[in-house]
Image 1 (cartoon, rainbow, N blue to C red):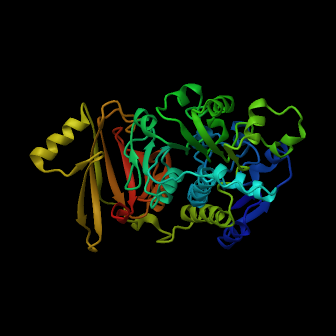
Image 2: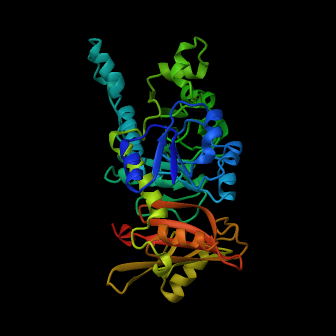
Image 3: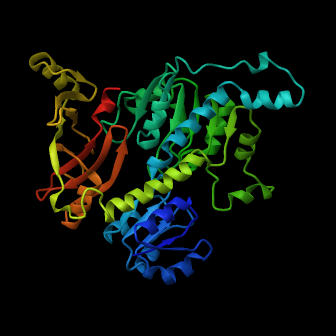
Length: 449
């Protein structure tokens, strides 16, 4: 199989692919049109963000079997067309989630303690102690919008700071021991520090605008290490001037584009951007939150691991003998009043309920602690989509990547993309009667830490 690498990456990626027996070519300079003329010769693509893999490109990639994006998301790929063509889409959010979480925390602490301002003043001979009195993170409520790989990593980093961590996510049941999932209204009611961890899509586009900002009960600090398109810069500046937003840590900007390096050559900078670069209340970095020495290696390794899992499963090259479902991980069902129903089960059947339902603990055949979740969902939930049913089963599996490979070979309908959290990997399939099934490769111990 032939793979075309379109962006430079850590050498470990190419080395691993060659070791697996792939032929790997590099082309970091040809135009998109030039690449389209040869892409039909390749079985795989490795890309970061060089250009968009759109429908036209994919129509010409007649032999393409997978696209590996060395980054957290798939926003520069026409996902719908790729899925229609049966192309594996591989991203690597696991590779830089730690880097992003450390960067977000670092920016926040620098802003809270006025370290940038104080450093510059001392270098200019000014010793201003009172003017640089900081504030503490201790006791604050940190609200997270989006609780996937990046959000969960940041919440984990916040442990030890004695903060209250809340999250809002369009998916239900994503909260864990590090963070309580709440409604958007509750998050906006309590948040002191807001951190954005959403992918780039229609829902997140200019999500943080004047209306959104004004719904917060208290003045707050903003962190954005996700995508610049999530924040309406002019509205952010207006809120900074009015004091509704007390300060901002921005690793990403609305104005980002491929030629951003030349942005400062233009004397007609947007007025809002001019305010950001001159404000002591704003800390900026050039989209490098996930850009560390370690993440450079992790991102490459993650993509190599995922390609290997598809074509060279470690447990067996003959997937006929793989373990499939090993137990029931959860029973999810719609309820007219989940809160009232949980109270009934707690009173009459002794369920130890929490915000998400009830966790039942047991031991498997190897005497390992395992769990099964019972969870009533709001009747209006979309988590069971595209199934019209009022329930969804979660089944435990040993090796999700290996099982998905086999299920795809068998023609089973896969819903969306697999996702990874600190408590396991998840994927979704449909059975022949239209029931959505959640598959879970668990890390049960995460619930106990």
